[in-house]
Amino acid sequence: MKVLVTGTTKQQIGGGTQLDYEPVADLLVKGLRRNQSWEVEHRLVELSEVLTDYDVVFVGLVPPLSIASHYLYPALNAIYQCETQGIPLVLYVDDWAFPSLISKIKTAVNNPEHLTKPFFERRYGHAWALEHRDLLIGVLEDLLQEKWPPTVIPAFTWGDHQVLQDRLPMLDQAVFVDPSAFARPYAVTKPEAKKRRWVLGTVSDQRTWLSKQGLEWPVKYLGSRSSKADVKMKERDLVQLYQDSWGVLSPPYKQILGTGWWRNRFVYAAQSGAILLCDPGEAAQLSGAYQVSAADIEKMSDDELLGLANWQYRELTSRQMSRDAVYATLQSAAAMALERLK
Image 1 (spheres, rainbow, N blue to C red):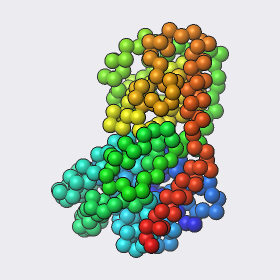
Image 2: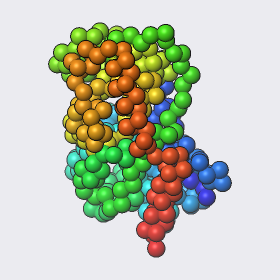
Image 3: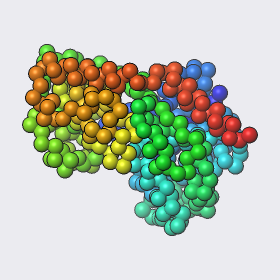
Image 4: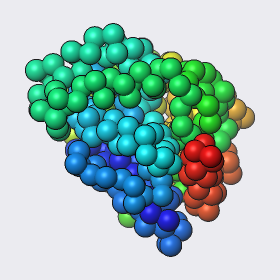
C-alpha cells in the first residue's frame, strides 16, 4: 500500500512548527505507519507530479484565503488529479476554525482573482496558479457542490461529533480519530513539589479571556508572537512546566464547544499530573472531573489537588483510542475512499 499525506500548510506537508509542537498531520502519519507494510510519504506534492502510483492520497485543508495556506495550489492540484484520474482521496482538517472552510471557499469562488492576488505571490507555485486558476477554482466549486470524500477529523471519542459534522454540510463520510496515543513522549523531571500556579501556552492572544478568569494563583503566560506573550517556549519545555505546576489553562473554542475537538494540552496536562481548567461545556461528558471551578481548585490541599489530577487522568485515558484503533480507523477511511470510486 503506497500512501501520500500532503496538504495546504507547512504542518500538513510535514514541515513541523516554529515552537516544535507536533501537528495533527504528523500524528496521523504515525497512525498510518502503524502498518509497517504500508509505504507512507508525508511531503509537499510538486505541481509537475503524477500521482497515479499512489493507492490513496490524504490532503489536508484550511480556508483557501488563509495566510497559512502557503501550499494551497499543489494541494488543490493533488485533489484535481485524484478526482479526475480515479485515485482514492481522503481529506482531513486540523485547525479548530475549520467551520469557516465553506464560507471562505465561497469567497474564493465568487472572487477568483483573490485566489492568486499579488498578496499571495510568495505562495508556492504562484506563477503556475496564474496560468491554471480555472482548474483551481473548479476544484473549489466541486468542494461546494459535491459530497466530500471521506474526511478525517481529530476528536476525542467522548465528544459530540454530530456537531462537528454539522459544521461542514458537504461531509458525506466523517471519520473521527483520537490521535492521543501517538502524541510525542517527553522525558520530564518530576519536581519535589508542584507549584501552585497556572500555565497557559498558546499561539493566539488570550489575554482578554485570561483577565476574566479571576485567578488567584500566578499565571505563566507563554506562546508565539501572535499570542502577545513575552516568552516563547518549545513544546518539550512547556510540558516540563506542566510537570512542575498544578494547573493548566485551556481557553475555549466557542464555535465547537463540547464536540471533543482534539487538543494536545488535554493529553499533556493529564500525563504531567496537572489539573486542566477548561470551559465546563468543553468536557461535559467526562463526569465531574473537568467541572471543578478555578476558585475551588485554588483552595484545595496538595492531596486534594493530586486526587483531582488523577481523576482527570483516568477520565481522559480510559476513553482514549489505542494505537491499533487509530490505524484501523485511518485504514477504514482509505477503504471508504476506494469504495467511493466503484
